[in-house]
Image (tube, rainbow, N blue to C red; front, top):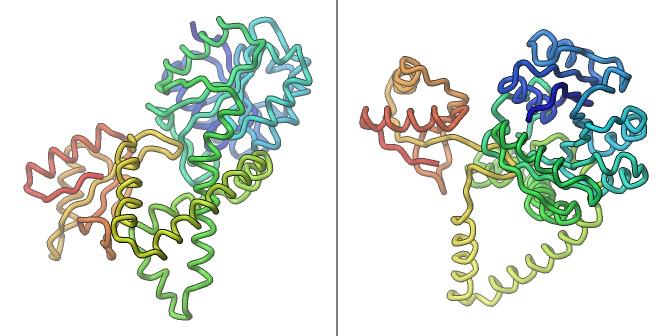
Length: 365
């Protein structure tokens, strides 16, 4: 059963993507939104994603069946009290924040709201921000964590779970504290580490910027999240401070153990360290996770005029859109001189078949 009307408070990267996805799948559902950016609301109206732009959390939200809190993590709490006066029996309140403790603790102050709240975290997105970087396919096959309160009805949880499935995501129900520990481990801590590593390399670099010039694919891959929005991560580090500090301490201990392993110089022990990490990492499904799936391939390319244009023509004439093309100058850990990135899995699969047919040597993902 689909909702008859949905409201969005905040229409940025994730909120905009949810709205665009819902509009793509359920174009007949009216979507209304409030955002602090008038430009964002104007763009969403012009694109037909929303049917009404609001100038605040007004009575226009009172007849919504679902309301999404999509403002920054620390700001979402400010809207909770305003929404408590708009409740009706069929309303479901949710959010899309990557930290859950503060919103759940705030909701607990309003028992009349608590039985209507199911926290949500679509585990997708890129390092980019804003409505202009939202897409109608970002949720496709992405995990979507749900953190219902103890008092929300089982039927409402099942209803929302079914809705999340219907818009292409994969619902996963967790306790909110378990959620914060989990994303702290696989998202928040890695971003802190990536930013620390980038700042370290920046400080170690010479006047000729040698390190930046030769930064290899491996370095860029593990530090990609360091390009994320600093304001967003300021919010996350404050909201999930306790878990992040515990995890930093755990990482510091683990890193000291790694240092000790290398210091001892035991070949078997060192190889075991890297083998263990490789085995566990290779078990991951790389097209699901916190970051948006990446559909890219690498291929060998003869250094001749028109080489890249030929590949682009092959793909374009078969209706395949290219998201990005890049020459790989340092290929310490990556075969292939040309990286080609696509928007979705179907284009990637078709491109592999076409380029194989034209006898290009491809190194997938």
